Structures are given as structure tokens and as C-alpha cells.
Image 1 (cartoon, rainbow, N blue to C red):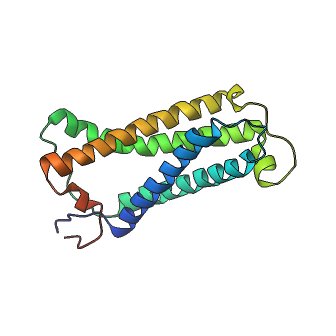
Image 2 (image 1 turned 30 degrees about the vertical axis):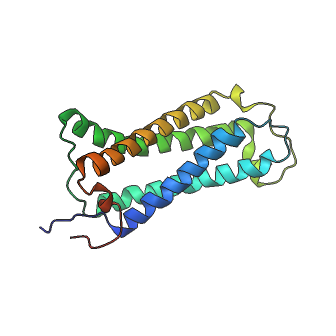
Length: 179
């Protein structure tokens, strides 16, 4: 068996593309949608972008999960701490679970609020006065907050590997020779 030191190029591409899309979705959700009244006429266009982006993120995460299962992976990166080494796979799998739950609560909110007809079919109906009346929307916000915190921990762990351990971890999620 050949030792692999990098992830498959498709997995790397999906990782960085998803990182950008998820950051954008979180920024739009927290930075604009949550702070803007549903009566604002611009909200519909931004909501359309957020919802389409969420569907794209879910689809790409499914592809990423399949590629991850079907391609060779480098060995697990060690931190030098047994507890942290045990937490890493939980955190990485947590991304998949959180994205699935966030997409699910987003879909549920959209259905409950009649958003497919309003946002994508151009029914002309107004948005509901407030999305927070839907428990799925409340869950969507909490899950997005947890995702943002997990991303923060992921970044801290990456910086720890790069600057403290100096183990070349970032090369694994880059392009180049796999072996």
C-alpha cells in the first residue's frame, strides 16, 4: 500500500470551495438576513441567494462525503495530546452533521413559511412578518452559531499545527503530489 500524504485533488477543491460558500452563507445569514426586516424589499433577493447557496452547500457536502469515502487519505494528524487527537474526528464528522441539520432546518423553515413560492416562483406574496415564529428557524440560527464556533476551533487547530507543531498539516489540503 502506498503512503498518501495529501487528500485527493477533488476533495481539496471541495474543501476550499465549501469553506468559501459556508463563510458567505454565515456572513449573509448573521450579517444581513437576521438584522433585516422581512418588509425590506431587498430581503427577497438576498434570501434567494442564501437559500440557493444553502442547497448548493448541501449538494457539495454530499459529493465531498462520497469522495472522502472513496479516495485514499493521509494518516490522521497527531497533536501530541491524546484528548485532542480523539476530538479531531468528532469535530470533522461534526461538520457533516451540522451542515445536514442546518440544511434540514432551512428547508423546514422554507416550507413552513411558504418560501419556495415567494422566493423562487415569484408568487408576489409578502414574506411572513417574522421567521422566528418557526421553531425550525430558531434551531437554524443556533446550529449556524455552533457551526461558526466549530469553524473557529478548526482554524485554531490548523494554526496550532502550522505554527506550533510545524508538521506541514496545511500541505495535506493543498494541491501537489499525493505521495
